[in-house]
Amino acid sequence: MEQSVVIERGNDQITVAVTDVLATTGAIPYQGFSSGEVHIPSGSITSLTWSVSHDGTTYFSAYDSAATPAAVTQTVGSGKAYPIPAALAGARFLKAVGNAAGTIYVSLKV
Image (cartoon, rainbow, N blue to C red):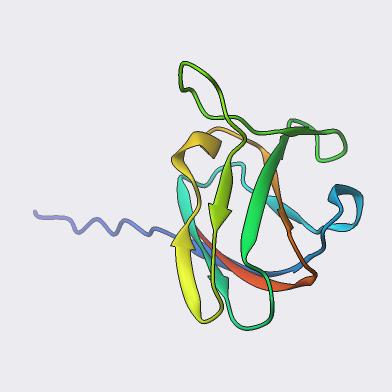
């Protein structure tokens, strides 16, 4: 007898309030997700600088793994979507600090 197997891959979308200050920028719960997209609907956000946390309370600046590490920063524009940087894989919580205040939409994929 043949059995059917259904594999469900979930995803979540959240709205995040971004500011130009780490302490007042909204957190993105990333544990359990493998990738995601950041959607910049409108406004004046032109860059995002990423921070990570192991506990959702204490955040650290995220750096890439280059020979001379650099902060994980993305240049962005309104009406566009960008992948969450691969350098952030494995983080439990993320924050995307903008050069200006605004709203971003984050889609997360298991």
